[in-house]
Length: 334
Image 1 (cartoon, rainbow, N blue to C red):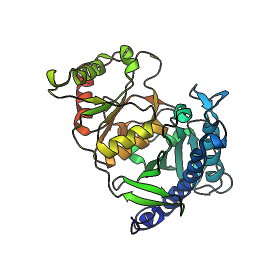
Image 2 (cartoon, rainbow, N blue to C red):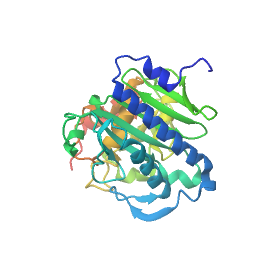
Image 3 (cartoon, rainbow, N blue to C red):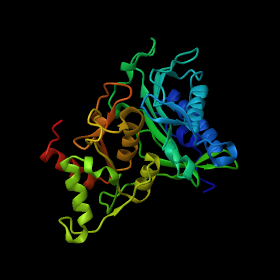
């Protein structure tokens, strides 16, 4: 692997990539290196998985590492001069840049899967880079209301056995592994490809009683195995960290499912469109998979609010298309 390019070298090879986007990706990678160093220390760095008595705008209990990660993103990116504005999953309003304004927008989840910190399951950071519609003025929330297909780049870092940065600039999906000796991200996965077929799915089955009939049908058929209508056996996996689930899919195929349900009927899903499903959807599709809101293409959905939630099915194309078909045959009536 010593001849593999670094992240900076890889980005420099793509002359059509916007210079400001290249610089922003490199800055984000630096933030992820800092968060990686903190997570590697585990309990030696304090009880970062401890709830601090606050809830974020999503109504979720914040962990210490949620705040630390968010503060690092803001501290490093707000003054970088590349952004018109930032939107964080942890903060209700936009984050405006300090000083010079740039021509890019960035939405980010500073720490995905933070409920897993105390049990040492991989967590991660997710980011999405969009063009600012008008870089000459103060950005507003509506500037972020662009479909995922408009993203200039998207990626995530996963802090696990090794720290990886998984990235797309619209030319496939690549994986970079952090070399702890040099502090550089090295290209180790030059092109992920998700198999069109799979025998593995990921879903939180504790919510089964709340699923709508199309998802009930799909999972029941998978669980029926070789003797059922699908004629083959399926395995189920569930980690509870979207970045870890996506890494599984990119590496060996499968699907990740978090559908809309009746447990919280006032929400059209559980995951955040801007901070989670849109960037992950781009990564999956650039790797040959499919990302859907269970009825149609995820990357066609136009957000209507900064913290909009949505149902999601992503991964191996044939299975996601089957889920869409079942939802089209039995539309959900709210």
